[in-house]
Image (tube, rainbow, N blue to C red):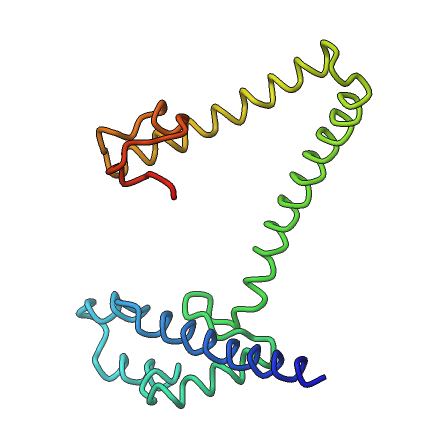
Length: 179
């Protein structure tokens, strides 16, 4: 039981730290919603000050963090200046669409992979099994080569070639050598 409470305490500290970092990254990021408005000569500085006060951007960071954390705990997840509403409903619509696509793609992949795996296992070692194994290996190799070509373009080391990646011993000074 002591282990459980220790892990629970660590999880609370971790959540607190992550919430502070998330708040700070979004708050201290360069630029904000009002930067474009500030550049517009038709908007008076008093209007900008009133908007900053309305959205509580004139308050100190700790006060804004407590206000943000309170909204997160109540399920609002902050406030969107662009949509002039809480973030949660906007986020849930987009999350629902993403989840729908993810679940559909996963079900289609399983619907293809599981029957093909069972079918291949029933014909182990025969021609259909070998063809399916070769097709899977070719697909994996093409994805690996694409990943290799991206990494080569990233650092463009002369020793990094597909042959060096496939060989058991890569060039000793190669920056992409594993181990």
